[in-house]
Length: 554
Image (cartoon, rainbow, N blue to C red):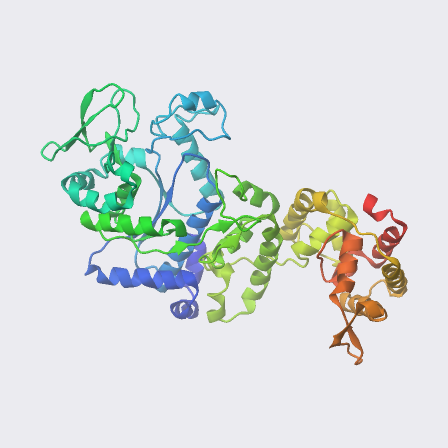
């Protein structure tokens, strides 16, 4: 990130354009600039924060939050010409008590026996060197973030509570206990109000993070008194030094105030929680961070994605079929709009990413800072030409039944002489992704339709026309021939359109027929481009197989 940012900061035109940009990361960055101008000379870094609950493994939402926050941080650094230091804190709430056992972990009985304990006190169910379940998940998080090259500082709630980072604010919260309760109680159900307290003492014998009423508070000793509901034993516990933690909304406020957090995003479902935590932060003498509430992801049916339902798309699934760059593009686009997050969004995201990348070098400064790839690559997008789209590769795999990249390259090399895996490594990477995506997400759902009598006539004519074309015919020439065949059949004419010679245009039904009969799909590529890549002879053979009924048998 540093090298990329240095490149952006060395271009005065880009810096000026950044100040004018309406791209959402710059709009967010300008809010932070306005915020720090009110500090009246206070010199300290601008703190960006993202939060993570390590009760399970990192997920696609974790990536989205860190990626988007990084984009805002980069925008801020550019418009301020990197004259103000910044930090990105990735905070793990690993002192939270484990409330339920995830279904996708081994040794579930071991975890069940330790329910209620802080995640860093729950034994590690995995066969590795990590000291606890929480430590294991933290290691996964850090590895996850490092894979994408994020520039961040990891912070553990357990470590920060124990070493006293929050002690001053914890004592302040004890002092302001009644004011905090006045904020919290109206947000709770009536039954919950009876037992609620902003402090969660850690049981000195069982290590369980207790959710119990606070019976007494001692400001002089900084302690709280509570009773174990199971044994009736009373305890006096310091609120400092990791002997207690805060409930999550007060904890969020505590963290903002203690660490001086300036910017933190959160999902739309946390709008009311942000308001509540902001009030508590002010009671503690802090200034709540700026940020925005991003929209949530939807599944294939338009329903909210739920970790418990497992109806979403995981980070591993996306990275099986496409690169992190395409996922970053998906996260960049319309963060305040609810979007479907399912397998079928991947091909479009991949092709849009490379389309933006291809346009970038020829853009002026104003257009560059509004191009998503500028934000994805921190101001310095790579030069990686990809002459064949991901969608086209998918259709090539479908038609050729290729099971390895070498088979695909035999077609690509013939279509684009001089283009090789070594000269175009990104294209080679896409070939691997396309094969994996086709095998898992396309092939199992393909349904070839048998052509009717009139469609058979049209396909036979198309086969004849393609075989008559010169072997080096361009994609445009082939497309014109495909259109001419369609126009020759009244069924495929579209009288609302005009052909270049003034005759009727071609209806979408003609192309739907080609896709459904030849590719077993409802949609497909620009057919002339596909034929140019796949080959005239090969396409004619495919049509022949569709006509004799052997195509669907593969």
